[in-house]
Image 1: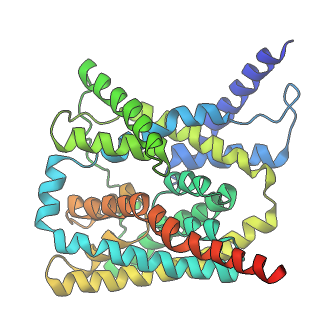
Image 2 (image 1 turned 90 degrees about the vertical axis):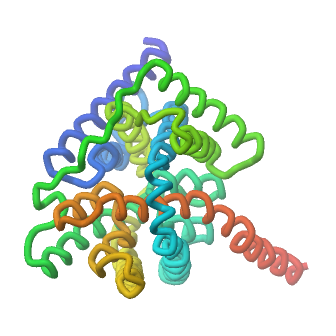
Length: 369
């Protein structure tokens, strides 16, 4: 049996493992089941280190890189003309997302660096208020540890989507979010041939231009910007098909899970413990943001809290629906949060955090001489 056949068989094995993980996660009602399920399943395989046709079955990095632009297209597709209109109405409230997100980021960064002993890049992007996939991609770009980054984000997401609905359930007096049986409205527009061509061109051209001008996470950020331009100008209203989003999450999740071959139980435990003070910080900041939004008269304290809480867009949208709040208001704030993390944090790290580290290294080198 030649190596190409073995490679193909190992790929089939890890795809089967990832698919099984996704379906288990769906049955268990986990958040982000198509990504977290495959991630956990692939991580278990990676940590067990079984030899299948001569090697440990892992998701190839090249396959992951092919699907990364889909994440950018998906984020960009949320920036529609309607979104921009709503953002124009709520702009003072939306502007608050940036400082509150940055406050959360910097406090969490300091805690991870001091308590966790992480290097600057890993501590900075592991405490990012954005999504796990985006944070890992950008962390890799700046030489952070992607494994520690994903473990820390997993702990944060798992705690956030569990604790936030529980806190609101206790406060309001009835179940909220997915536990209440609420579901997001199906806003998927049919995608035709022209839409497909436009989005494919957005992915290719966006990634190419972003790489040429040295944008961080170019394969994701470039398609995100071009997709946002297409959707906000009305050239297309099509969203990425659900099946493609699920496949993308499965591939990326399994790819991230494969990195756990180098992770031990002590690291997992440490990340879980560190996530607790980080969650306290983020929820405290969200509570202050909710009070601020209420004082300004834009929404209630609870809706403001949901809009700034560190959960996913889908889960926070479900909570909004279950308490008869405006899901568009909530979603817009979370979109701005993700855009803040993707657009601003790499610049902050590049121009403020990284130079400090380089200066310290230069100073140490000079003292040694």
